[in-house]
Image 1 (cartoon, helix red, strand yellow):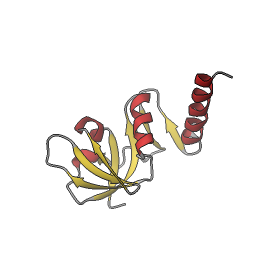
Image 2 (tube, rainbow, N blue to C red):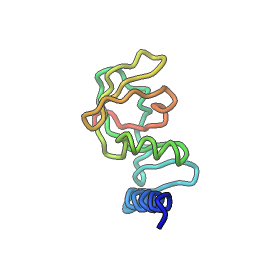
Image 3 (spheres, rainbow, N blue to C red):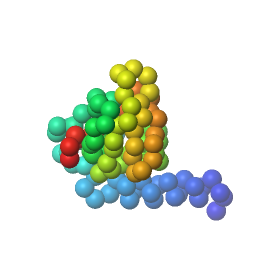
Image 4 (cartoon, rainbow, N blue to C red):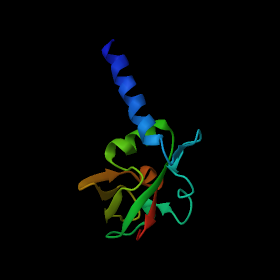
Length: 115
């Protein structure tokens, strides 16, 4: 099997596992657990510096969901916001790693505060 086909086969298997079970993948780009994605969730960009939350969903196309999953923003992951000045990029800690996100990316990550 050619190398490029192996890579896409791995990605398909990875995302099938990621989206199986009690997760749902909507064709309009909303990803999260059933019933949790919009109940009391707020965007990551709405948190203040030092606040913690748990990722409950992602919004965006398949490229956005793929990028956020690669960075560690999957449902159930704990996030601590280190820097948010209200404009420009913000810095978050997810899975013991500091990640700099643009404001548009952070807006598409839905978190539940204090969970």
